[in-house]
Amino acid sequence: MVKEKRTARSRTPAKTGGRSMAKRRNRKISAKKNRNAGKHLTANRKYKDTVFRMLFTDRKNLLSLYNAVNGSHYEDADALEIVTLENAVYMGMKNDLAFIVDTGLFLYEHQSTYNPNMPLRDLFYISGEYQKFVDNRSLYSSSLQKIPAPNFIVFYNGTEKKEDSWGNYLSESYENLTGAPNLELKVITLNINEGHNCRLMEQCRILKEYAQYVAKVREYAGNTDLDTAVEQAVNDCIQNGILAEFLRKNKSEVIAMSIFEYDKEEEERKLRKAEYEAGREEGIKEGELQKARKTAIMLNQMNFPAKKIAEVLQVKEDVIEEWIRESL
Figure 1: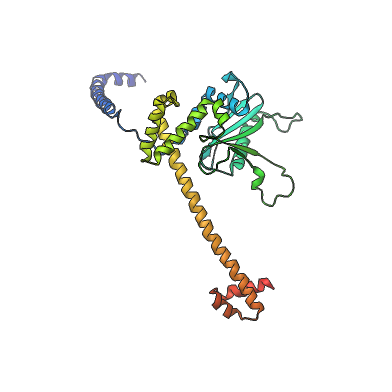
Figure 2: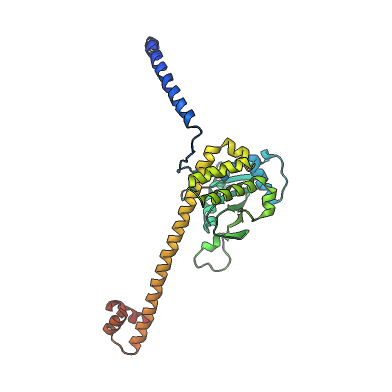
């Protein structure tokens, strides 16, 4: 160990020269950065967070949102315990916000596209949360283990649905459900686009200004490329006092997140359209097939041979024969 220290000292002059060269290189890099500082900001399109999540991980903002949703008047942000599962990822998505107030557990999620599977996703999330609560307790003891009551809210700012609010239920996913479901989970979705849930917006200024920012991004994106539209929306909001302090402080991050979010929203919309078209075509094919089957059975009852029916309907003879057998 001593020899290593001495060797390090003996190389000090050489290192000094190296440091001088490093300093000169750093000065050049700094100068280049300064020259580029005022240039157009572009985004890392792989950004995984969202502007909504970034805004409401701030305890004061989150408490304001909670009060607006629940009609409560809490003032102490420390009374709110954030318990979001940072490493809980399902189908590439993580829960945005989870927190406890009093004895209630609240899961807040932001969505820019309509997703009827939120109850099933929240079932996975809440299971992870409850595992944390009972981690050091025995589920085999004779005493009842208490857990906070769950509440599931989605804040939606997509363009597909126009209602102010709606509910989705886990039981809607069950196949062949008879009677009341033995396991139910309800998710309430609130539309936070401009012009919706006005009372909620008035009671939570940050949410209202977030909706205004999203509206500006969409407005400008209709007239120019996405990178320019997002930066223009950010600058416009700063000038007009909309999320001004937040946007000034986090400008580059917000631009990156917004471009990623908007790109993702467009990709999901295109995917849904493609799925719809594919399903529609498949539905037409299936419909034509059912008509052909019905016609084949009718012609068979009129004593037409299978070979002739196949020629008329342009369907393979073995398929016609199978349809006839199934109808007997």
